[in-house]
Image 1 (spheres, rainbow, N blue to C red):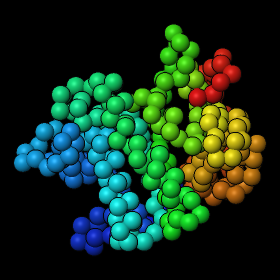
Image 2: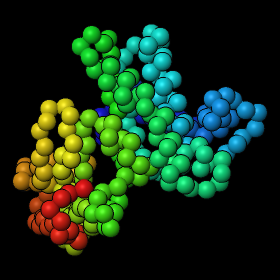
Image 3: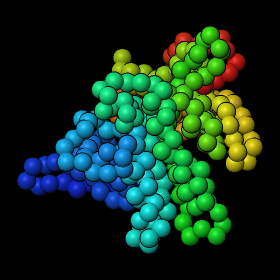
Image 4: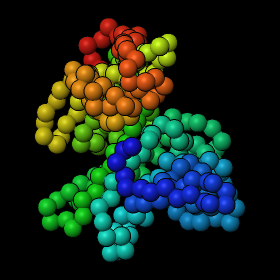
Length: 263
């Protein structure tokens, strides 16, 4: 759904469905299996596991390995890294200490220094053979005492990112469910939320408004009538009604924030 090229493979003996194509998926379990014997503190492999959870440093190391393969000519194509999301993993020091220390986790983010400040930006120069991109989701929280937004795992990515877009509300979630109803059947076909360009070092344009997230991409909420017409088969199918049935649409508002600032 996010646009990667893929194909489904079905095991005829078991019926199991797997996916292949021009993408690499690394889940938490995959990271742990690959780097569980790696000591990030001393940059070496060890003989027995020091931890039983993936860590932030695993992600940076795997990204570095792929970028190195590209530089060495073993991976001859552009790379786009999608990370969902910062704040779900501990850093190495927290993991081996069997605790969660926010300061240690924030310090672990510095392993991305070369990636976000050199390797990704350099690849976007006109004289670079390949163009690489790094997109990540970072959880945020509101510091009510200082009236500031804070980022999980620290402010490293905030200060080093070229483009930051905030989705949702600053105090409450700031979202609304988009629903269709027919013959007593109800189906949520999307979510509407606030959106704000908080930082833009690409072209300097900053805007705020609302956006609708659907199974068929992002839509301007003012153009949802066009969406309903274009994907009416999809909506009818999920409502389990025939095309002749009358469908009503509604927007179920979530809790609204009194703040003007979207996050």
